[in-house]
Image (cartoon, rainbow, N blue to C red; front, side, top):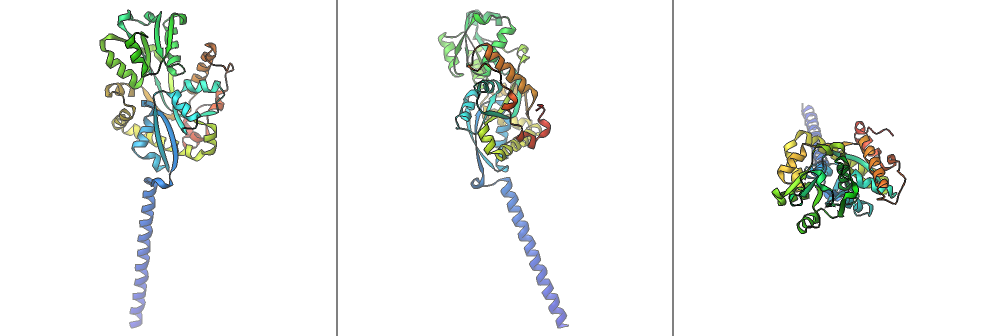
Length: 346
């Protein structure tokens, strides 16, 4: 009988030891899971993003706010710029790894032969810009812009959109004088009478409209839907070649962010409003026009080709040959993360 008791006690000790091991393994698994969800900064891959304050960057803002980049094993350092060409310049100069930018600056750099590529479009929007003019100069319709000085940031989408707007309203290009200004400099130039109108977008536009009040007339009608802007993630070819997994990590985080935005619209709008520094009313109105989704869509190629032809015609670039813009798109990342969103034939 004592032998049986000893065998039972020995078996019980083994069972207890096995239970302890199972509990320890479960605890370790839980710890590792938590480390995946919110890893410490030590083991994270560093990615520098040059961004523009724009609601189209909402997936980036949601990913930052909800730690989605960290869940993919990357730590994003985030620097703001007011125009896309400056963010793109930071990428080209190696001061940032990935930048957000509209299609026009990409076309201009491609005409110069820059080795850059779009890794994804993250937003599309019509009516991105508005033209603000002072009533005191007898401006009440687009045709009244003839013989006026118009502030514009040359080399940006605003330049291309302004020219398309004037063409649509049959204002001869020789009848307006373009003054190259930063977004922040346009308000002062209007105040001093150096310009009579300006084309702006985002927070600077909202501030200027608020400052001028009933002294201004704003042109942002449906005719501007002749152009739909794409908002893109761009990196140098060298960075993409050396860091293919980090590119995929960024895209996975943004894909998750887009799903979050779809499910939590109001919270996402509040996050995007905070990061973009837009007036809440203007942000809500703009939010309804922005399509947020990862894609590589034929619209991107169409815009790049149209803008390149326009720039060559206007002699705005030394490059006279339209490049094959398929060479300026990196397909591998998005094809790995969301293959159904790649609809450009290549």
